[in-house]
Length: 343
Length: 297
Image 1 (spheres, chains in turn brown, red):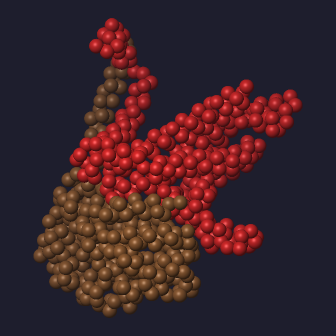
Image 2 (cartoon, helix red, strand yellow):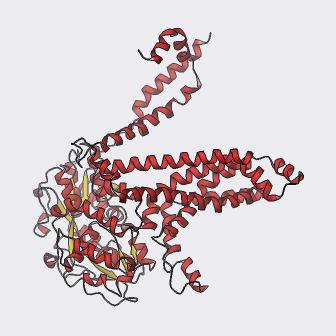
């Protein structure tokens, strides 16, 4: 009789199908943990070394990290539709505005942070809290080029033929191009003068690269001057690369990195504990030290000599941008950049 | 009632018997289900998303299709992407096929050494290999230092962010994909056939074109298809080596989906990439079949 083995097989197959249901992966919501999206690289390393142990020690909460760039966090949270793959975002101003517009964050209550009083004014709002600042300016190789004075120098020789550029994909790229445009008559919402100027000199530009490859291009001498932030300059310097940070005459640009609670998170309490730990004086001090080189936001932290300001209040004089105005224009700028600079 | 349904209705008993009998197709069922769940469904979703006009995916319409195909810039990007694939296929074949011939003529011991060298790059991440090419192609890189030392050019050549540089890098990065199927076919080739060709008076070139090449063609076609599909979609290598000066479809997809969140336009670009890569693969397969007929004739 041939039906018996088939019946057995059928039974096994059915069991396998039923059994496989229990094998479907389920996230482990251990009591006392929080999963944070984290920028890959320096941020992830620094947070693993300093924030995770401090959070465990102070609150007995485990910090899990999902390495994602800001734009990827927004895309993933949006695709997840209400069941966020992580509890906390870490974002630059552009993606932050997108997150608010698309309703991806839980409302934020600053009173739940014990360290909130140590932050400068404006560092918290109803959506999140600032955990780091970034200071953007010009990085150049002092052994190969004279010191540039301002943004407009980048489009003049000798700097132009050694210039490394990136487009509007990153926050630092976008704000730097806006600042260049301003020097030629543009504004926060008008980068047309930049395109007019860059068209004239495009063949001479040394490199127009992917943002992630810029440090490697600088290190390899493909370019000797570029717009960048203090953190990248300090990191390259510590690797023995000849690079100095210049605060442009029109002022360095600053923007803030903020953290937010993902809408629908089940670990809201732990997310507050995580944020409170990040902005604590001890953690902010540790994050400022090499090789992390973060710009702190806690006023009790004694600033490193490498930073282009003596205290955090000076940063109020730095140039800042309104990303709610920039975001709607950015898609058009990216497209325009593609057309103008591609061969 | 459809023709198929009518056919089943006519022979119900036979149809059920065929279904109930364990058959080979059942073995392919898990893969088929996975394929349906993880490829077909997302593909249909992609098609659906492309049929919306706005970034928030609320208004139905084909504005993004019109925008993409009504703009010469996007046509150029699509053409450049396909062209990059074919240039890489040509370069890998020109360099890879002689390596395969060396493999064919080597002793089993040396064949193992060659195979190991071919596989070696696969053991390193593509990101590492791509960044290594920045060091090789850069102004102060190995190639430029050699060129200047030999006096070929007084100033460093611009290799990074040029199509030539990118094809050079992709040729090395994709080479294992060409060689592995090619070597696998070549290692099964009967050496007596080449000896017979030589014994019958054919020159080495004639043996190569009349015996070795036709017999290795299935491996070569498989390798070329893999190289084409992989190089046209190699986002990391294209972006890191090509920068913003070279715009290909994967960069457009990334910008539209992850930087500006215009998923409908990203879907149009993704479907264009899928179709153009598929057409390229079909073209390679057709060319392969035709030339097989030619070399046998």
